[in-house]
Structures are given as structure tokens and as C-alpha cells.
Amino acid sequence: MKYLVSVLLIFSISNANVVDDYLNSLKTEVLKNEPNFKGFDYKRGEEIFTSKHIGKKGKEISCTSCHGINLNESSKNFFTGKTIKPLSPKANPKRFTKVKNIEKWLKRNFNDVYNRVGTAKEKGDVVTYIITK
Image 1 (tube, helix red, strand yellow):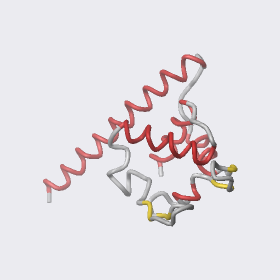
Image 2: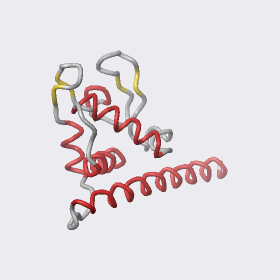
Image 3: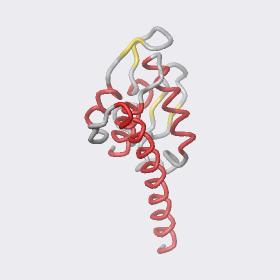
């Protein structure tokens, strides 16, 4: 049992390091345009995540349309009906394990909902929101 707890703790710390590294790289990018930037904000991230827009398929959509409100539960893709495992890394330790995957899904999801790539600040705010859930 001690081994399992140790493995889970190491995995969680590893995820935290990936997220911290990613957020630090986004912060560096934001500071280039906003020298007074103080940090990413959970509330801004929540607004981005929950606000509705006419998405790339011409339908009103938000991030919650596919991921739901409770990020600790599975949800269904708005367009395909496929099950999406929990987005919160607290409920799904496979989330936020690689920067490459974080970037891929943020790019895809911003395009689906906003019809554009998210800014570094928006991405940082959304990730900050998700990891607190």
C-alpha cells in the first residue's frame, strides 16, 4: 500500500511539474506584451471555459458543452456523443502529463469554440481554472 501511495504521489508531483513548466512558459510569453502581468487568474479561466460562442460548426458552444460543469466527471462530446474522460487531473491523472498534449488540445478546443487560437494569457487562465477543479 505504501508503494502505491508513493507512486501516486510521484505521478502527481510529475504532473504538477509539467503544468508549472507550461504555465511559466506562457507567463514569459504574456510578459512580452504585458509587462505588468501579475499572473493567471482562475476567474478569467472560468469565464473563458463557461462562456458560449458560435463555434466553428456554426452552433452555440462552450467548453462545458463537451466537458461539462463538473470536471471530475466524464462527459459527452457535443458533436459526436463520444465519452470524454474527466478533464480535471485530480480525477484523471492522465491529464496534463505532457506539454505537447496540453498544447494540442487547447489549440483544437479554442478553434472549436472561439474559431481562433487562444492567447497565452487565455490558455494560462483556462489551465489554472482546470487544475483547481
